[in-house]
Image (cartoon, one colour):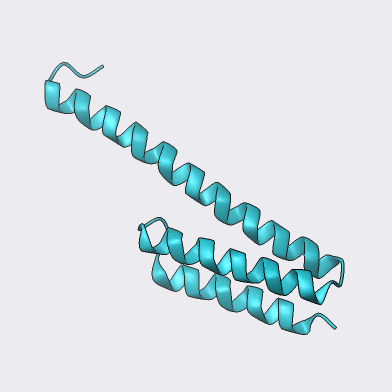
Length: 87
């Protein structure tokens, strides 16, 4: 355990940020799973609605620095292509 006050603070801050990042990543993964479930069910309208929500969550996570912008763009692109393939 750290003895220096600034080191103790860094530990607390890093734990708080890790929890925040984990929660945001979890929201993104849940949104992506909803899109995948709608695609698996061949429900185009539900897939479109879920895609909109997932893109929004991804953009928010990217803006907060959780994901790199290219990672976000790649995920959005792949999800969009998958939704567009649903008949």
